[in-house]
Length: 215
Image (spheres, rainbow, N blue to C red):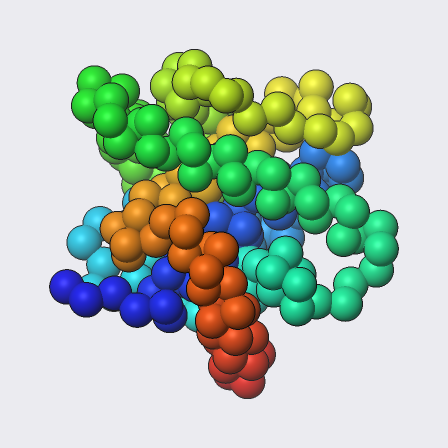
């Protein structure tokens, strides 16, 4: 299958949507519920017909596209927001590194798949964003990816980060970011494209955001 810059941009938006939500939770203790559900739902999508179907449709990636545009130099957000969103970029880079390590560890990869499948079964009885499902996904992240180096060190307000329910949501989002990073690699994405095709990806992200907002 031939993948395009559109596919790679969508995958990147998925990563940045998840990491931006991690940042919001860590600093404010809350995040957009629809954006959160988009990320969590992506973990349970099997054999999608195309890249965007992992996230439902392009309208569900508005925040991820906006964050990606800011990080690529195409945004004009408030200085405080831009400073905070640097954390999202840092987490995204770390996630890409960890995903490459995970891909080489078949045993751990199997444990991740098993953990997601357990959460899927729970979601059939509750919902994909029910606290029991989120706790299960968070546990899977803690027992697998969190043991790899370098660890993702989340910055934020201690009150929020130390809250067990918020910590679970953060870990579940980091797992969703890993899933998007897998998609990025499957779309033939790599760090060189981020460097040499930065302008092309920025243009595509802006085009997709206009499309998403027009719906």
